[in-house]
Length: 214
Image 1 (spheres, rainbow, N blue to C red):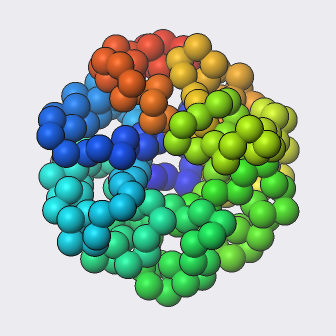
Image 2 (cartoon, rainbow, N blue to C red):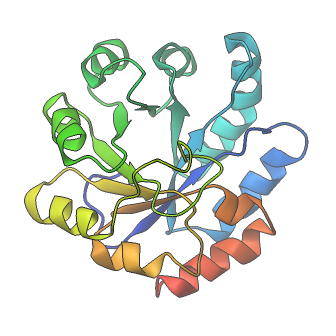
């Protein structure tokens, strides 16, 4: 994941079920998204590290062949085991400093910051390579419930104006609602259901058109 992107990029987040035919779906999505999709987050729950590594192997190979960053969600230990390109940390996870110590200088370390300027600045000071704000829209992946504070696009503009560290917009992002977030200053749009809930190639094509990247 480059730290300087002239245009908003897509950052795909896996569905929880990455077995079965999912590797084929990922291949199709990345091939349709060449030049647009630059990162993929491996996100599984309730599986042990051995099983997670087994599931990750074909997906990591697909990403490497297309020069797409392979980011592990939550687990520094799994990211280290896989020699992943980086790790994405929630507020309840270990710190960016711990991740840097474990994964090295080249690792891409991202931190979920919800709607908080304070958390984002803390993450930047701790060495994060990118900060993620959201959920901007209702999301089965990243919502914390109906009372979760929902950021406004202006938060992205504020961050982009003051800081060099890239920012990621996340939460319920679709081709229909992505443009304002890109225009506000999001370096990356993190997308899960907006791609995997239907035909992935059609979705990537729709994102490309919505972002004027056709």
